[in-house]
Length: 92
Image (tube, rainbow, N blue to C red; front, side):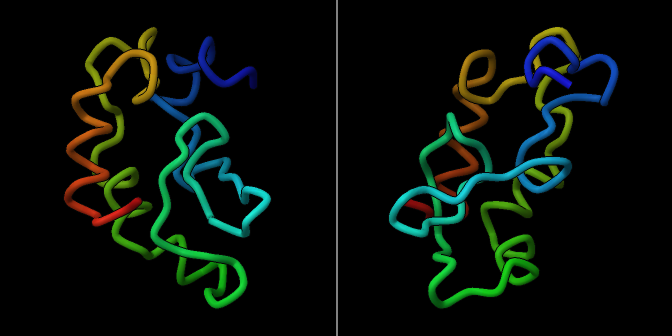
């Protein structure tokens, strides 16, 4: 998988814990290395709980983010969806 170009092969974005997630240097558990939003930290949250967190659940329930699977990325292709997910999840 090469992230963006495999949207059609994996029915959308691979991030948000579907096949991939990211933990940054501060320990924030992010849905993607390119989406710097979180509401969980590895220092005080188990991974299974992070995957059940509001932000990760937004990623899970909204997949795919677009009917065009060649444009699967919420950061690059669907910024309005990303903004709404972050706001609804209360992420920072």
